[in-house]
Picture 1 (cartoon, rainbow, N blue to C red):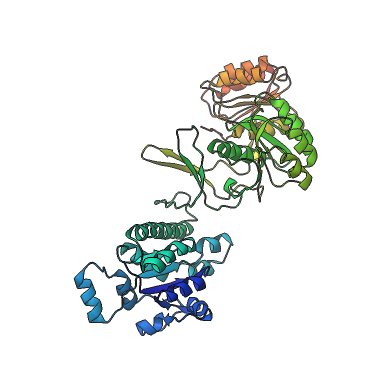
Picture 2: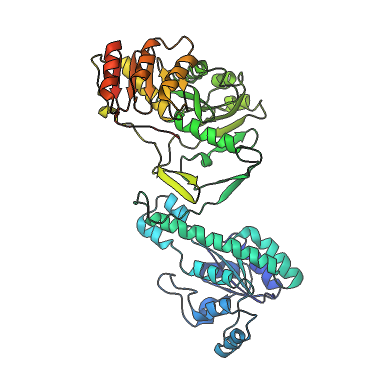
Length: 507
């Protein structure tokens, strides 16, 4: 289909002058609006203002420019329908063969924290209307919404005077994806105060095609929403490309590390903690985290809530590690870590979780959506339910263990001592089996440790097993019909028990 007349109206002027010059050299008449026309004219290219075509001036602070039958009839006329062509002649409307449009930067304006009135002004009306019109009529019209497509389109126009059917179809697909993402962003902004909107619109750009998914026979990709604090915002400073499993594990590790205020290191395997500890300095925190389970730490993910210093970097290199993630790296530490060519090094711009984050999981036929289990714990709602009262040091250990437990697969039991993870029982079908596994994994460090359980104990067998291992205090949500029996068991063993009133299942 030949291209003889083009309409160019872009917010992002990247490549517009060069595109217009090349089109003009190919004897394509150019129509344009406002500042885009100015850029084209400044490049020495002849351009016709849309207002001169419509006979109607731009108005309402630029809200109305191209919304006119003389423009949209020219775009929407199907060149394969004789009646359409006859009507164009009757109405004295010239066909438009190529539309070059990109939209107001709505998502960027929202991300910048702009005032509501400014955000509203970034809701594009004329742009999406032209894009959709051209994409609908792709058998006759080409639509360019991405400067990355300019060169291919120009090559075809220059060499053969028009665009192939295949390219027009591909450009139409890109155009509808563009407007769908735009409308989804606008809808999400209007729904920002609705915790679970009635209609969920998701349009995310694909930012990476991964080698494969959890297993080599599964295809996978990463799609991102640009949220501040999200893992997708991490800058990779070294190492191989990230795999699907790397991303899952790293997200889990980062979420765990930033859940504590003191210098902290978390070591993750298969999204579960292999080690975690806090200390006055990062190297000590890493050493203590590694002590938690040095065998499982092999091939793990290391996350820190502080920038990595050179001493910590040197220690990390002594254990095979897949990924290191932190809110920054000392230059010398980065040089040390880069000596391992395959070690993936990720720097996060912010040690914060995205506000109002959702957790989305697929089920056959739909999506499950819930608020992410993030945010500050209501420590002041904790309630001691036993005769034995925990001291301040014990309470500090209980808070630490509870935080780690929150990030562990259910049924989850965590043992900690001196704010160091010493044993984990994760993903067991029976809670008492999780207790036994945590004790077994702790070696001889369970005596004097505290225990956290992500959900209530349905029977007293769990506290009995903990007491037999020398556990001194337990934190759990409470809420079982047998709470009295469970509390009585703790009292019988002289164990302090705290109810949080909040469960942290993690499936």
